[in-house]
Image 1 (tube, rainbow, N blue to C red):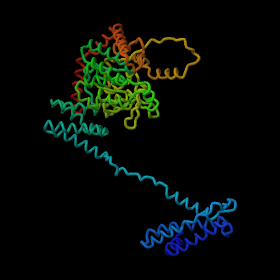
Image 2 (image 1 turned 180 degrees about the vertical axis):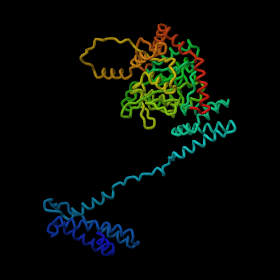
Image 3 (image 1 turned 30 degrees about the vertical axis):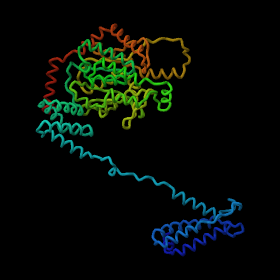
Image 4 (image 1 turned 45 degrees about the horizontal axis):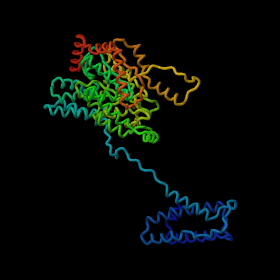
Length: 558
């Protein structure tokens, strides 16, 4: 092919024109029934095919290198190359009689055209050409050391505040820098800075930065005080009414009574409004009813249409806008700047992994070298955490954050008390549990009905599976056996009617409030015991140990 190709390339345009005319003559003679080239064997077809392919490649090469006059001649050759149309009434050659020249040339033409129309794959853009700038580990480490050194060398309050903000932003953007920062002694530096300053803005940034680094201050009580709130839709008004009784007994606000608060679905909504915004329980009750009325007011026609189209009965876009208004767009980790802020967590269920997994939205990071079995993050906003935790199937659409698809946390962990205890023990290892208060959103006494036990409908099977997945009392039974009665308290009222999560009729909501009041009257002594357990202050020995541990951290002694 190399020798023949060089000879063909040396041929002039006039020679190619002669060959083209010869091919045209052969084509005309082959279309005639009496022509001696009417039938060709496979060998002749193969030779002609190779000749045509060589001609095509050389022709394209010649066109790129000849001058303008030659290009005009080539254009004429191309026009003469097209064979004349044959009469459609002429009989076609049979396949068993061999290969005809028009069939071979037509096949070659189709093959050539199809090869020219093939779309070439898009060229992949290398990472170094992408708009997203990749930062190397060396650059991150260098930046981390520089920011830490700048804090140590800061002279004025404003300069120190600016550099502390830079450190907090740097650690939030590059969480992997946390380990190097701790090795470089940043905890000791921040604690010493906190001891020397009385500027409130500086102290607020220090609290956030310490939370990002996983540092926790000593507990104010004898142990860990935990609050857990289940999911349940509008039945969350039961929890609000019972929390009012707890505040009346203790004389303190909810965020002052507990060190760790965890919620799922409805519980996530309540705690994200009650704690960061410092609203009263009366304001929370009014807000919750107003929010429920706005989102759960839906015509059956549009609701059914949405359910078929987007698998959500209610308007998800409207739900997200309401959450931004009522819950707020404050980043979770930013709430740690509040000196009265307890540790908060909201739980969702990630459903696009091989196994449904719990995801914990935190306003804190776990301590250095502590690994949690649960997925989690601090980089999201309050409304995003609530949106993910309350994405009830068939009520609202699933919520995507990054590569993860979130659904209502109640699908997997409708009673988050056990998860809350685990997370709290990760934050304060070795500290005893002082009090655990868990609130449910209502239950009814089981009633044995006279249904046929030999069969059940598919609808009944589905709801039985759903009830077992969202069961809350199994966790309660386990914790009730493991924890002392003076430590663990579970309040889950019996209700007159188990209303649906999207109930908005005032009489039904009023009935729930009456059920909560009745439940409190029947369990008033238990509430008083829980209030007493929450009010225990730390002992003298604990305060001495806390003072020693703090000064060890200030001196960098492990």
